[in-house]
Amino acid sequence: MRYSTVCACKWLIKFIAAIIVIVITFCIGLHSETSTDHNATLVATTPTLTPEEELQIYIKNLSSWQGQNDSATVNSHPYQYLIVPTKICKLNGAVSDPFLLIVVKSYVSNIGHREAIRATWGKDLPPSVRLVFILGYLDFMKSYIAIESRRYKDIIQEDFFDVYRNNTVKTIMGFNWAVTNCKESQYTFFVDDDYIVNIPKLLTYIKSHQKKNKGVGLYAGYMWEKAYPKRSHVSKWYVPYEDYPCKFWPKYVGGGSMMISMDVASAMKEAFPFIKPIFIDDVYIGIVAATLGVKVQMEGKFSPDYKPDKIGLLYSTHGVESSSALMHDWEMVKSKIKK
Ligand SMILES: *[C@@H]1O[C@H](CO)[C@@H](O)[C@H](O)[C@H]1NC(C)=O
Ligand SMILES: *[C@@H]1O[C@H](CO)[C@@H](O)[C@H](O)[C@H]1NC(C)=O
Ligand SMILES: *[C@@H]1O[C@H](CO)[C@@H](O)[C@H](O)[C@H]1NC(C)=O
Image 1 (tube, rainbow, N blue to C red):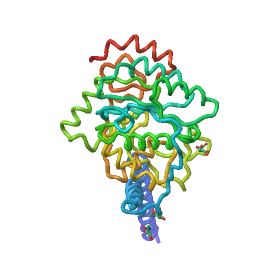
Image 2 (tube, helix red, strand yellow):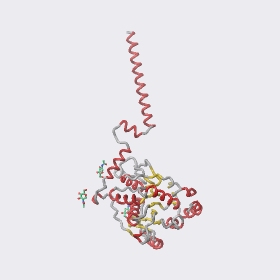
Image 3 (cartoon, rainbow, N blue to C red):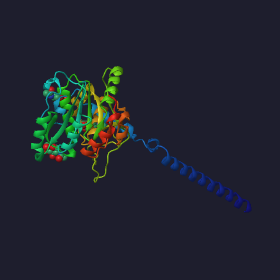
C-alpha cells in the first residue's frame, strides 16, 4: 500500500514535469514565432505560400500576356490628345531627338508650379535635354492651358479628367508620347512638379550608365521594398483584393522621380494594354517592370524628402510646397549645382 503510493507519486511528478516541459517548449516556440520572421514560421507550420512566392506566381501569371494579340487587352487607353508640344523631338519638328527627355507630371491647374520650373531648374537646359509637361483635362482650365501651351509649346494633354485616380492614365500617356515621338532618345526621366532637379548631376549619372550598360535596361530611382497595398476602405490608397491579391507590392521606384532607359520605356508601353491597371502609378510601373523582368535600380540620390540645401549631392529632391517656395529655395541653392 505504502509502496504503491510512493510509486503513484513518482508517476505524478514525472507527468507534471512532462507537462511543464511541453508548456515551456510551446512558449519558447510562440516567442520565436513573434520575434523571428513571421512568414518563415507560417511556411514551417502550414503548407501555404510565402508572400514572396505568392508574388512570384502572380507576376509570372501576368507575364503570360507576352505573345498575345489585342483580344487580350485589359487596359485600354481610349483617350485623344488635345494638345501636343512642338520641337521636342524629330517627329514634331526638332532637329534631333534629345539624349534625355524629361517628362514632368503636373496637375492641370498647377500653372504656378510649371512657371516656376521653367524659371528655375528647367531653364537654360543643355541641348541634349528637353522637357515636357503632362496634364489631364479640366474644363475650367481650358482657356488658361491654351494660352500656356501656345506660349511654351511644352505641354502634352489628353482628354481624360485630371483627378488623382487617373494618375496611371496620365503616366501611360507620358510613356506613349515619349516612346512614339522620341525613338532615338536614350533616357526618359519622369518627375513630379514638386521636385527640384539637379540636371548636370543627372546627366553625369546617365552618361556613366550609358558607358557601362550601353544605355539599356535602366529603371532607377528611390526604391520601395516590401510596401503593401492598403486594405482599409477609408485609405486614399485603398486597393481591393480583386484588383491585387498579393500581400506585398513588387519592388518599385517612387513615381515622383523615375529614370528609365528608352528600351525599357518602350517595352513597358507595349505591356501596358495587357496588364490590369492599378491607380497608384508608381506601383503599376513596378508591376509592369516585374512582368518584364526589369530589375529596379535603387538610387538614394533621388531623395523622397525635401533637402534643397543638399541639392549639390542629389539628382532630385521632393517636396517643394509651392511655386514661390521653389523660386525662393532655388535662389538659395542654385550655386551648389556644378555645371
Ligand atoms: C492567371 O491569370 C488568369 C487571367 O488573368 C486568371 O484567370 C487566373 O486565375 C490566374 N491564375 C493564377 C494562379 O493567379
Ligand atoms: C487572338 O488570340 C486568340 C487566342 O490566343 C485567338 O483565338 C484569336 O483568333 C486571335 N485573334 C487574331 C485576330 O489573331
Ligand atoms: C478618368 O478620366 C475618365 C475620362 O475623362 C473619366 O471617365 C473617369 O471618370 C476618370 N476617373 C475618375 C476616377 O474620375
